[in-house]
Length: 215
Ligand SMILES: [Zn+2]
Image (cartoon, rainbow, N blue to C red; front, side):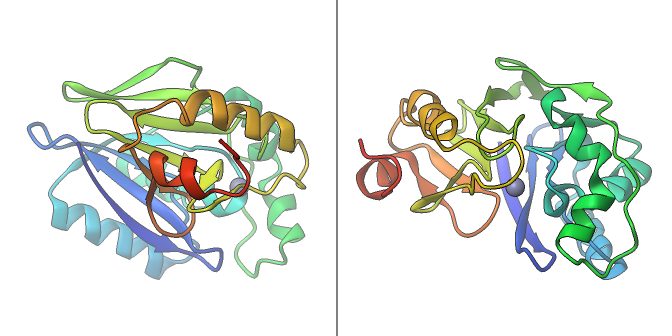
């Protein structure tokens, strides 16, 4: 599988596009576009890649990770796929926008159309992304693991030398650290980690030098 990212909005969210080369089937993950210019950037990127979006997936539903869902749903006729424990956050998108004082059109409630659970496989051609539930940053945060290509898309669970904040509603530091240790630090060391903010890293590098994980 191939992967690329575009950085959107004032939170610097990485929106990922993952695709299967033989078929061109693609997943758009965490669309963060907040204005027409950013929507056009996503559209142009997909045109240049020549891929066909077949999945729209959210690692979680904090507003910076799902503001662009409406555009992707209507442009590519795709349902929103996420863990059901994120449903309240989707319902409260306008409240989240207010909390962060965002000067953007007020978002409508976002419904989860297709529930994702631990162990689910989302296929793009013959390859798949496997769903890992790792709550703690938010109640229903998921990480997407591509075992054949050796990478994870970690949302706000794991960052380069850091982890997601746990002070927002539904957050839990012990849950987050326990999930990272059990489900991510057990992956091969050369697995590439593509986080929701900032640059990529590897599982091995995080094992050695992430101050929160302590292995
Ligand atoms: Zn978040």
